[in-house]
Image: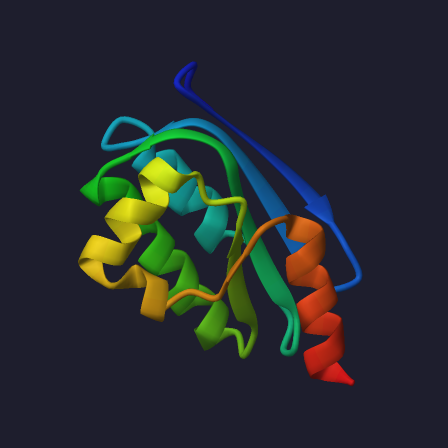
Amino acid sequence: MTKNLTLHTRTTTAGPVIEFAGELDHHTAPEVRDALLGLNLRPGQQLVLDLTEITFCDSSGISVLIAARNHALACDASIALAGVPERVARIFRIVGLDHVFPTHRTAQAAEDAWRIASE
């Protein structure tokens, strides 16, 4: 990943969690899109995008998040956002993404919600 953004992927019982740190913008979006669309999601899994350390997100970043959602749904998996900083959450509310993505305070809270829903 470029110096403006780093991704860290880990696996939980619910599915992959990708932790973002830095700027999700037109410079970093292509690499992020490739990484997200390259994920092998299984039906029933949940992809969590942890945005706790995101410092900036532009329209290219929003497009990548929507592409990740479409990929998850095509794989019969779900997607959730975690740790969305208020400055980014405000943008999401303005463009209506708060109605598209389930959002949780933490990645662990997203995993807990998935576990309850799958029982």
